Length: 407
Image (cartoon, rainbow, N blue to C red; front, side, top):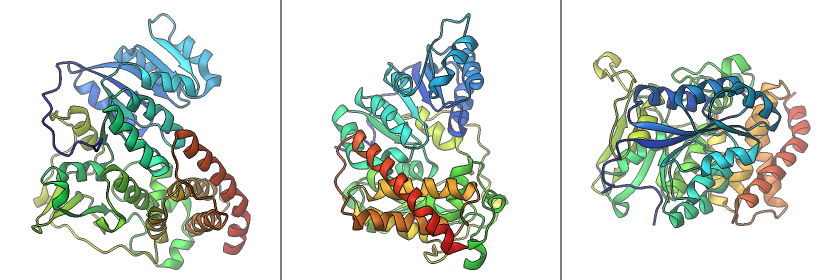
């Protein structure tokens, strides 16, 4: 049984829903808190977590009357405790405290802790059968098979919070699994959509961070520029909806109005549209199985005028090809793909490699991993974290020669 509810017969949500936001001080967390702020009568905040922003976390905890707050940095415990002095809010610090936040009795959990660090907290929510709005790609890219198996076993409900996967989730409700032909994930094409390969190779950090449509964090914006982010979304969709690689297509759509489409056996194509605002998919998850009022701008297609589409260019954006290859390989290859990409992006930000070398480092790391005979099914969070850790070390080892080739 899938943990993603493609059609729902669930009764209407209770009058007040208890919620926990893992990663409350990040960009997804900020959008989630904005929605909660607009619907205070419908939600009660159980727990909030943040990475290092203690003051921002404490401010949110006090504003929403959270029962528990946790900062991921264990060295910030005293600072958080002092910031919450005089309140009844319990607090903690470190990985165990973030996991404790996820394990507390909230009906609905936003899993927005970025990176592999978000896996164990998300599993803590899954294992108690919570409804989990998943905004952390790494949970599925690093550990998709057993993550979804654990969710189904615990009776947890996984709701996709990414705009593209949420769009597919909504469109998939128009038919049955056996009627599905393919899903189509749209991509803006990023800031380098029309650039020549030679220019992409030499792109600067400032240029990579100029996304034409979305306002996002630094890492995901760079991933969008390289289309690595779209590759990660292909992998995520495969695990979320139990799809084969050949059932997932990518279509470049510069306006970012259509976020995802599903084609069925009668050749009907069902699409989800909306302004490029993360609050729309988050609002869908937050209200599900109902819908709540969202603050995003109304979609004015007449004003937009036209929607255009292009096939993705796997030559100029090899990260997308590498993602499909890793998905087909399986057995930890997608975990290696993600880990190597994070190392590569960090190296690019630090000025150690050119933009074009990001994909080359990822490819070299995955190929070395396969040649070394390291591929094996992942059966636990510890397995996935170990592969992630070792792949990062391997990518760091390969980094100097990749940088040298690009110089």
